[in-house]
Image 1 (tube, rainbow, N blue to C red):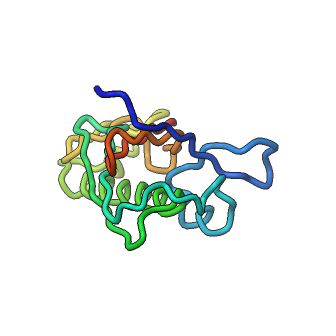
Image 2 (image 1 turned 90 degrees about the horizontal axis):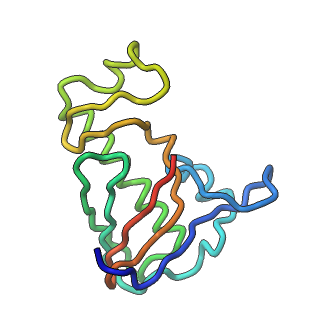
Image 3 (image 1 turned 180 degrees about the vertical axis):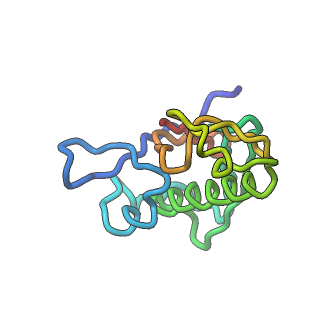
Length: 147
């Protein structure tokens, strides 16, 4: 794996917490518009098309492309991550023999693994936290997700 061009921590200032923290991916619709993303209006790239690598919690990593006139701010990037995970979890449910919801009665602490297009294991979307962004090449971003 090549060294990244740059690395950025991703944090949101939350009213109830003294320190900025990594946001849950699924919180974009609420927090992306009402909370202050640390440097959210900062231009991440002027490129109008980017690729983002999604690999957690997936057995089959995937790149998705996103387009935005005028490039991407950190806030717009978070929106892309959110939209990417919406597609991943939806496609997983459509292609798995048994969905996570079908398996819900067997859950203990973690989301059960499913055998769909991406092989999601261990976490629902609301348990994923966007912690870091690495730009591996111009317009190619890898995200680091905590849970």
